[in-house]
Structure formats: structure tokens, C-alpha cells
Length: 395
Ligand SMILES: [Zn+2]
Ligand SMILES: [Zn+2]
Image (cartoon, rainbow, N blue to C red):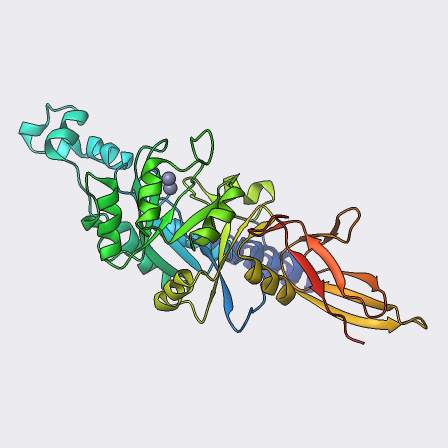
């Protein structure tokens, strides 16, 4: 009798479970039920400290969707950014290159007026001038982002011949439809007239060297450029760290993602590129103010670049120094604790050593001496390239 009752309970639970899920679940087995929790998609947190009273917001200032030549929708981009632990995202479609539009028109051709049916696509583009609403992807991203607590910076990428002119992101645009001009410098000016900030993208892409072209000299000289990518995808331009400093530009590291960050970064064990923005809050106003005042750091594949003072302040906010012993000769034993998701490579004048995320290491410092070392995965615009830290040790 007892057996029959137990069987009835099991049978009932199987019926209920199969209605909820394609997987077998046993409601009486707590561990089995917990299995379903694995289907939840969670945000990966990337932990950074507050620096000089500012929060550090993790941003990607360069990405694409199907509204230009990307592979995913603006809504997917936003969800991906949330999963990757970002706070801020700019969706920056190419103004001049939007191949998906042509494909969509091809698909819709059956619905086009009879007189257009015979036209081939290239002549449709030429004669009709396919022109979508360039604000749409920013609007869709902004709408989606509201549900995730992510800030969307409305943007667009001015996209001209890479060898001579280059690509420029206009960030904080008011109307993306009112930026195109046949003259690329005029296009940049039109964006700035809307209050946009201009970031020079991937300055070394398809170039033999980083010598500035005539066009670049002109727009830099006119003061039309506000920021520059030190890193774009897997490209890193160390000499541009100096250029950014000399021209007073904010430094950025962005993905320029077209496919997915899962494919390009996460599946290979990497964190996506990020521009760290030191701001009061994540409002558009505060973020814009931070970029104008150049409170940014570029982060890509473990390397961090920025102005010397900011890089040093940032490092000292990440790592804590605690003296735990003083010997008879006054030599201090110090624990260095890295309370962030970043890894650091330190050099105390010998072989480089690691101070990985959420780890600590002990070092000894002679009496009345400062703890001196270089941080080799940080880049600053100085002769020696890496910041030289001199840390005063208490006691
Ligand atoms: Zn580009
Ligand atoms: Zn791009």
C-alpha cells in the first residue's frame, strides 16, 4: 500500500515536470531540480575600484549591428553588453556602408512597385538611393538598455578610405541622419555642431605605419578630434598613447564588434576590450564630461593605457599595501592585495612577477625605503613606457 502511494507521487511529479521542461526532473530530488538553474543567464561582474572619488564605468564605444554590417540586432548587442559586465555601450553603425539594407531590399523586392521589379539591386541603390533611418538602431538599443540598467551613447561611424582618411566615431549625436557630407571633414564638423565628440578609430588599420596622413593632420590641427582608439579589437598602437597625450585626446579601447563577443573573446578565455570611464554617474551628461576631461583608460587583453597620473592613481586604488611585520633592522614585510578583476605584471628590478586578480603577494622593503617597481602591463606616455611606482610604506 505504501509502495503504491509512493509510485503515484512519482508518476504525478513526472507528468508535472514534463509539462515544464524537456528534461527529466524528479521533484522529490532537490539536487536534480537545482539543475534547471543552470539555464539562467547571469551577468559576469568585472570588479574595479573607485578612483579619486569617481566610479569607474566599463564602456565599449564602438559596435555594429545588422543596421550596418554587424551580424546581430541592437537588442542582442545590449544583452551581450549586460552579460559581459559593461555599464555603457555605443552602437555606431557605418554612415556610408550598410550592406544589410541592400539584402533586405532584395528580400522585399517582391513587394516593391511593379516598375521597380525589373531593376537590379545596384541600380536600385544608385537610382533610388537606399536610405534607412540612421537613428533607428540607437533608438532600439536605448529602448532595450533601459531594462538592463545600461547607458547607450548614441553614435555613428564616419567611414572613409582607411589608407588616407580613416574612420571616426561621432559619439553623443543628436541626429545621425544629418551627418553625412561628401567632404569627410565637413561630416566631422556637422557631427560636432550637434555637440558630438569625435573619436579617431583604429588609427593603424590598413596602414603601413602610424605616420599621420594629410587629412589626419588637418582634422587634428583644426581641433576636431576629442579621442582616439589605443586598442581596437586585437590591434594595439603603443605610439598613439603619446599622440593622445600630446593632442589632449581621451584614450579608448573598444571591440568594434561585428560578430559576437562570445566568439571573438569569451570562448577563447578573454574579457572583451573596454574603455574605463571615471565619472560621477552613468548619465550621458556625466559620461560626456568625463570624456571631455580625458578621465579614461584603455583596457585590452590585459593591457591598460592612459595618462601617467591617472594610471598611477588607478593602480593605487586597485592594490592595497599592508605592513604585517617589522624586523629588528626595521625591514618591513608588506602584503600587496589586488582587490580587482585585473591582472598586473610587476617588475621589482629582476624578473617580472604577477599579481593576478583577487590575489596577494608579500614583499619586503628596507627601513626608510619606498617600494619601487614598474607595472609592465600598463602603458603611459613616457620614455620608459611603463609607470614607475614609488609607494611609501607605513611604519
Ligand atoms: Zn571602422
Ligand atoms: Zn567600426
